[in-house]
Image 1 (cartoon, rainbow, N blue to C red):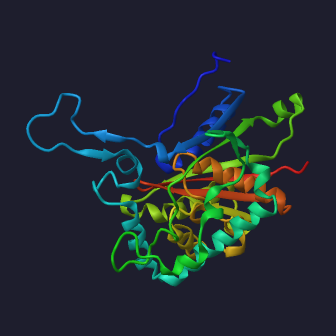
Image 2 (image 1 turned 180 degrees about the horizontal axis):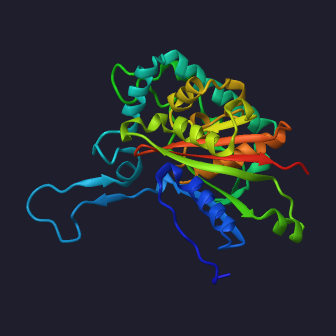
Image 3 (image 1 turned 180 degrees about the vertical axis):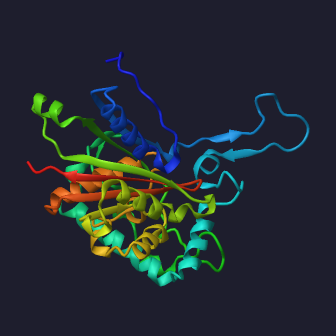
Amino acid sequence: PDSVPCTTVNKMCGSGMKAVMQIHDAIAAGTIGIGVAGGLESMTNAPYLLDRARGGYRMGHGRVLDHMFLDGLEDAYEPGRLMGTYAEDTAQHYQFTREQQDRFALASLERARKASEDGTFAREIAAVAVKGRGGDVSIATDEQPRNARPDKIPTLKPAFRPDGTVTAANSSSISDGGAALVLLRRSEAEKRGLPVLARIVGHASHARAPAWFTTAPIGAMEALFQKTGWSAKDVDLFEINEAFAVVTMAAMRDLDLPHDKVNVHGGACALGHPVGASGARIIVTLLNALETHGLKRGVAALCIGGGEATAVAVERIAA
């Protein structure tokens, strides 16, 4: 109803996950009883901006700014510097080769395609009707995995530096998407006869120097383990957002995480990264993966432009 309040969270890549964290805390505090948390993003509709146009242009050149770059893909602290250049720095720091990053991206694509083809993703996707020239078209599968060309991945040129190793394939793509979760106390769910998927065990945030946002998920997960009393070995599955392959690869190396426990249905290198939605999307995917594989504990984490990261721990409740 119109009487229900709403809040918009702007935390770049972390927006969807931060919404979940805030709804969780509001319920825990008794401020609200039930909440819907999530995020959405339409990067393809990001507008171009006319700098200083409001007061009228004078003699000389004006500027047209890409809102997608200005509010997401460029660093706010070093104007004009793309996030991908920091991924290059991360690859150099960890000595991740182009071949290692491409292998990771290929594995992500293979996992995502399998999850799409065998119906796993169908359990977490709500079809959307899009108006076309011939009438409504139902979109019920992610487009990116279907359109990807695995044979082209090794041949792509570096995207951010001429001699670099980060490409369009081992990075996340520009995407549209949305995801949402309903949160409430277990007692309230039982009273209403609603099935409970999982409980939120804890959440954490962490910040580093803006140039090292790529490794901030490591600190966020370490903080989360301290809060929950878990260790990495206690976790059955991880969803670590693949803003760039090196983000997830760095977390796997520093936390000693086996690849067969990380992004088991593929990640953003295959599915895309609709910035405002991804934080909620990886929690949805994590819950589905835990149920699909009959596992219990999971952690979702993602980096955020500007140096931060967030992480959420969930524990599945068996039916």
